[in-house]
Amino acid sequence: MINAIIRDLPAMLIKGYDVANVPVLRDIVGINGFVWQGTLAIAGVIFAYTWGYNLAKAYKVNAAAGGVVGLATLFQGVAFSASTAINVPKGELGQKALDLITAAGSTVSVSDVKDPVTGAISQFDTITTGAWGWLKLAHLGGNAYFTVMILGAISVIIYSKLMLKNITIKLPDSVPPAISKAFAAIIPATVALYVIAIINYVVGKVSGGQLLIDLIQKYIAEPFMGATQSLFAVLIIGIFIQVLWFFGLHGPNIMAPILEGIYGQAQLVNQNIYQAGYNGLKGADAVKEAVKDGKAYNWVRGSFDAYAWFGGSGGTLVLIVAIILFSKREDYRAVGKLSLGPGIFNINEPVMFGLPIVLNPILVIPFVLAPTASLAIGWLATNAGLVNPVTQAPTWVTPPFLLSFMATFDWRAPIVTLVCVIVSFFIWAPFVIAANKVEIPED
Image 1 (cartoon, rainbow, N blue to C red):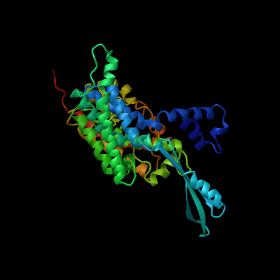
Image 2 (image 1 turned 180 degrees about the vertical axis):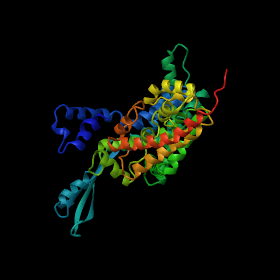
Image 3 (image 1 turned 90 degrees about the vertical axis):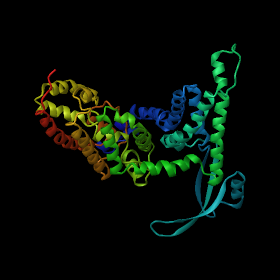
Image 4 (image 1 turned 180 degrees about the horizontal axis):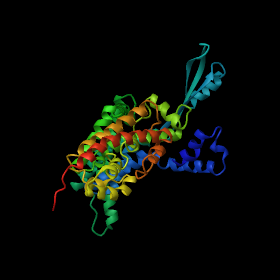
C-alpha cells in the first residue's frame, strides 16, 4: 500500500513521474520490496504452518510439530527447478557451440517465429536450460492455499490421530519434557509425510511428471474461484451472511472459509500481480490485463468491505444515519447516537445487538436488501471496468470511502461507494420510519 501511495498514485496524477528519480522514496520502494518478499510473496508458506499448527491444536496434540508437518507437506510438492528459453537466430550457433550446450544439460530445438507485421517466418535455435534448487515463487504465495487446505489437512490429521493413539517414541521420565515431545512427534510426522510423498509420487507418474500443486490449482482452485466471481455467487454469499447475522451468528466469521479461503486468495493474487507486474504492465493495469487472461480477479475479499459493508455487515452506518434523521423513537435514537462513532470505523455490534437488528422482523428486510443491492452495484461497476479491481488490503477499520479508495487507488471507487450508500439509504429509510409506528413495550 505504501508503494501504491508513493509510486503509483503520483504517477496517475503527475505526467512523467517516476519514483526511481525521487531520492528517499525510491529507497522506500526498494525496502518495501524486501518486506513483500517476506510476506505476500510467501503467504502460502505462512498459511501452511499456521494451518498445521491450528489443526493440531484443535486435536489437542503438539501444535508446533503440527505446523512443521503442514509446512513440510507444502514443500514436498513445490517445484525445485527453474528453466528458461533463449531464441538464437538459426545458423548463428556453430556445431561446436551446440554440442557444448547439449553436453551442459540444456536442450536445443528449432522454433518458427512469425513476424506479426510482415507475416515472414524466421527460424531460431531455442536453447532451454534448467537449474535445480530454485523454489518456484508461484507455489509459495496465495496459489498454495487450496493445496495446503487439502494435503495439509490429510497430513496433519494423520499426524494428530497417531499422536492421540500414542503411537510414539517413548523416552524415560528422566528426559526433559521438551525433548520428549520432540521425539514423540517423530513417528506420527514421518508416517504423515510419507503418505503425502506417496500421493505426490503417484500423481507425478500418472500425470506425466506434473506436480499435484499445479493440478489442484488448475482443476480445483481456478475453476472454483472463477465460479465464485459470478454476480449470482457474490449475492448468494452476501445474503447468507446477512441471514446468519439476523439469527445472532457472526456471518463473516462463519463464512470465513469462503471469504478468506477463496476471495482472500483472489485478493492475494491481485496484490502480487499489482506489485510484480504482468505482461510488461505494472499496478492496476497489470491486474486488469491479468483478469482478461483469468490470472487475476475482479471481485475479492476487500470488495465486500469497499462497496457493501460500510459501517459493518449490512451497511449499518446508513441505518444509523437514517435513525438520526427520521426516527422518533427514543430507544432507536439513543442506540443510533452511541453507535455512530464505532460505525464510522466499521464496528456494528452496538447497533446489531443494541437496537437490535438481530431477530428484528422489521429491520431484517432492509438488512438483507441493502447490502445485496450494494453488492450488485459494486460488482457491476467493477466488471464493467468503471472502477479498478481491489488490489490493496487496508485495515478493516478504515472508514468508508477512504477504504474503497485505498483498496483500489482509483478515485472512482469512492463514487461507486457513494452510489451504494445512497441506494442503501433509500432502502433503510422507509423501514426506520415504519418502526416509528411500533409501540415500545413498557417494563
